[in-house]
Image 1: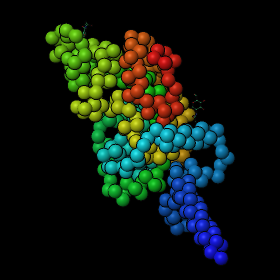
Image 2: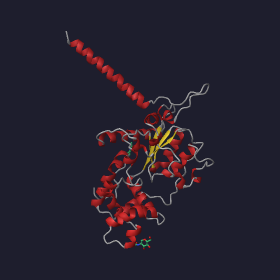
Image 3: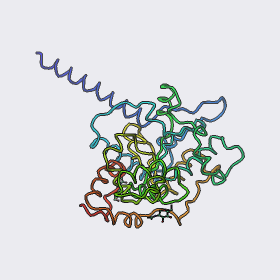
Image 4: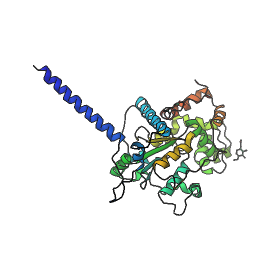
Length: 337
Ligand SMILES: *[C@@H]1O[C@H](CO)[C@@H](O)[C@H](O)[C@H]1NC(C)=O
Ligand SMILES: *[C@@H]1O[C@H](CO)[C@@H](O)[C@H](O)[C@H]1NC(C)=O
C-alpha cells in the first residue's frame, strides 16, 4: 500500500527537478530582453539577443563560436576544481560599452590596442575620430578613457554580466609570449620596461652581469626572460605584468561565461562577427593588421630553439591552462614531449 505513494513522491520530485533544469537552461540560453521598449518603436535587440535568439540561419561562424564556447566550458569543468565567486578585482580588464551592451576583456598582445580604439569610437569618447587608426596607440591605453566593469557596483556588475555580450580575444600562448618579449625587451625605446623588469632579470638570471646591464636592464635574452617567468620567486613577489600574465588569470574565463571567444589567428573574421552582433559594422571597421612586424609561429620556434627541454616543460606548465581552455595544441617545435 505504501509503495505507490513513494513512487508518486519520486515522480513529483523528479518532475520538479526537470522543470528547474529547464528554467536553468532557458535562463542561460535566452537571457531576458534588455532593449528598452520605446513606445511605437520596434524593440531594439541587443548583441546578446542577436547572438542567441537570432532568427537568421545558423551560419558557419556561429557554429565555430558555439564549438569554442562548449570546448571552453568542458575544459573548465575538467581542469578547474573549486568554483569561487567573482570579485570586482577580477573585472579590471573587462571594458564596458553601455551604449551597445558589450563587455570586452582585453588581453595585451592580442590586438587589444585596436579593440580599445574601436570601443573608444563606439562609446563616443573620441569625439571627431571615426577611423580607429586615427587614435594614437598611447591614447587607447590611457586609464579612464574606457570604463571597466570593476568600476561598477555589485548590482550593476551582475546586471551587465547577465545581459551584455561578453567577448574576449586570445592567441596561441607562446606566440603571445614571444610577441611580448620582442615588444618589451628588444626595442630600445621601451626603457621603462627595461628599467622595471630588465634590471631585475639581469640581476637574478645572468651570471656575471656588466654594471651597465645591471643599471639599465638592456639586452635581456629570451632565455633569461624564461628563467624569470618560471622562477617561483617572481610570482611570489608580485603578479605577472599583464603582457605576460595568463589569459586565465586576466579574464577568468571559467567564471565569466564569454559568449564570443575570438582568436588572433582569425582576428578579422571574429572581429567582424562581434561588430555585426553589435549592429555597428556600418559605423566602424576593425583595422586590418599589419603583417610585417607580427610575431608568427615560425618566429616562436626560433626563440624556443635555445631553451632546454627542462625549461620548455616548466614554461608549458605555467601556460598550461591557456593552451587547454582555448584549444591550442602543444607546439610541434617543443622538445620535451
Ligand atoms: C580544436 O582544435 C582542433 C585542432 O586544431 C580543431 O580540429 C578543432 O576543430 C578545434 N575545436 C574547436 C571547438 O574549436
Ligand atoms: C646591449 O645593448 C646596447 C644598447 O642598449 C648595445 O650597445 C650593446 O652592444 C649590447 N650589449 C650586448 C652584450 O649585447
